[in-house]
Amino acid sequence: MVSGGSAIRGSRVGAGPMGEQDHGHHADRIAVSYWDALGNETVRYFAANLPDEEIPDTIDCPSSGLPAGRDRENPPAVAKNEPYKTHLAYVKERRTEEEAEALLQEALDKLRARRGTLAS
Image 1 (cartoon, one colour):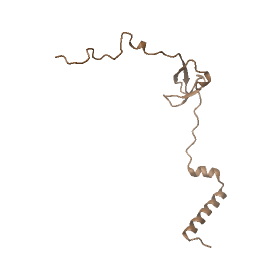
Image 2 (spheres, helix red, strand yellow):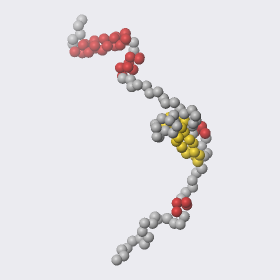
Image 3 (cartoon, helix red, strand yellow):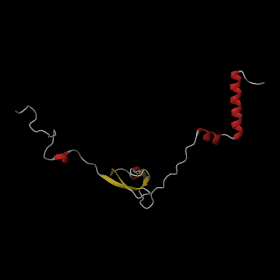
Image 4 (cartoon, helix red, strand yellow):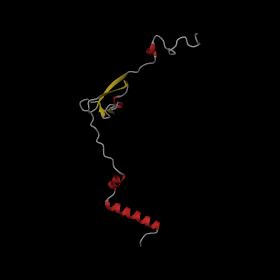
């Protein structure tokens, strides 16, 4: 028994003898190579009419996560990560020990005054 439906099963609408060749126009492009400190090469493609100053000098290498540059002999150095600083560390950079003592005393005086325990 033949059921109703498409006579050509599995064919895409619009598919013909030309296949994918007739689907749009490909813009001209250029390949730019980037290398990281481990020697990994990554190729990125850009439009051929893109000005050179708009092509990035460095990218993040997808395989190593390191910065990668366009100069194979001199890849960019890994940026030194600064250790995590606590809020207190940032405060200590902005305040001297004397300023910190004065602020602490002022805050304690306000707290004691609110509670009614300020000694005269």
